Length: 254
Ligand SMILES: NC(=O)c1ccc[n+]([C@@H]2O[C@H](COP(=O)([O-])OP(=O)(O)OC[C@H]3O[C@@H](n4cnc5c(N)ncnc54)[C@H](OP(=O)(O)O)[C@@H]3O)[C@@H](O)[C@H]2O)c1
Image 1 (tube, rainbow, N blue to C red):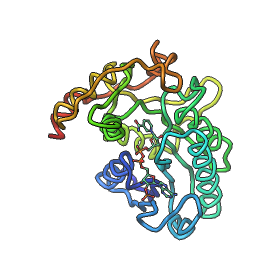
Image 2: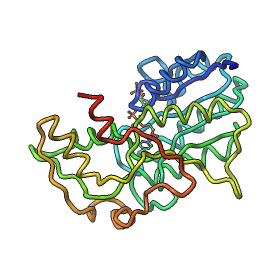
Image 3: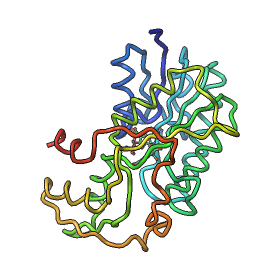
């Protein structure tokens, strides 16, 4: 197997740390990029130095909150900076993660990923995208965002997937220079968990382990809750489905 040098934007995040692990286990050189490692994809600080000799950028950096406008601005600026700096550094290509259902979203953070995808696909670097389902690791974030003692979590269908599983598929895509570029007749690939879960039920399983009461609520108060309620954000027929299930994953965490 030939090895390459990968720069990972968002290397310290929920997904990014798994991407770094998978790349390292496969014998690739890795340049971790986040503000913690002195690289800021918004201001551009440290970016040129980090990209010296890099073959592929993997972009899993993210805005930290759910506000659509702020997230849109983050993805537009970060993607532009990664492409411009990558071009100057003669990087071969970029691979970015997005969210399943962004093409149907009309509001919120999921809709902000449309700009992330468009900015990537308009170059100048050749770009591949992997859309992922909501992460197993995201359920804990929903509990952390609770106000008061009880977590109110939408009872909406979702096909939760482990970050490690997403990272493996993302690295497969990034390491393949011949992977098809998305376009007419070539859908953006998707990765999701092995089965549909109800988000509030998954949160109850986690809540029971963490001693947090979880109540399932309808999703009408969240952006595009009506689309989610009818399965609009579930993976397409071309999606790759891979374990562990949420329950299996939970057993490895406690
Ligand atoms: N959460 C989900 O269920 C889900 C599902 C599908 C797809 N996704 C997508 O997956 C991607 C990663 O999500 P995640 O949950 O892993 O995010 P996360 O845990 O919030 O991590 C974000 C990463 O971005 C870095 N970062 C933030 N601002 C930066 C800046 N200005 N310059 C450089 N690095 C910066 C952070 O590090 P520093 O703070 O050190 O800079 C961190 O490493 C996002 O695009 C997200 O939309 C998420």
